[in-house]
Length: 112
Image 1: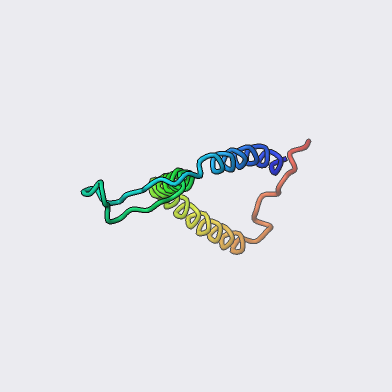
Image 2: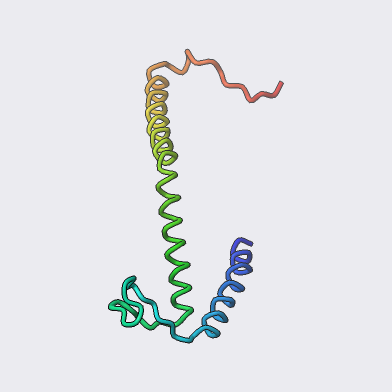
């Protein structure tokens, strides 16, 4: 079911990207020189779809990086909690092994 839903979303998106790419193959000049408009030092002729898709990809990467950095405190808390659980489990196991089974209360199934 999950694969079907993924395909249901990704196939139309892929189709739109292909249609956009085919329709926007004309080259555009991308200039990285802010001082010279006539003969820029750093300029490239690229297809329009490549410029747009590269801008989207960079935006996704920057947004993902910002989100990953912002969630660092939650990952740190999860690591701390995981270590605490491990310590408590080992303490519980040590205490259970130190006390004989006859001293522990009998476990009931909850049925009368």
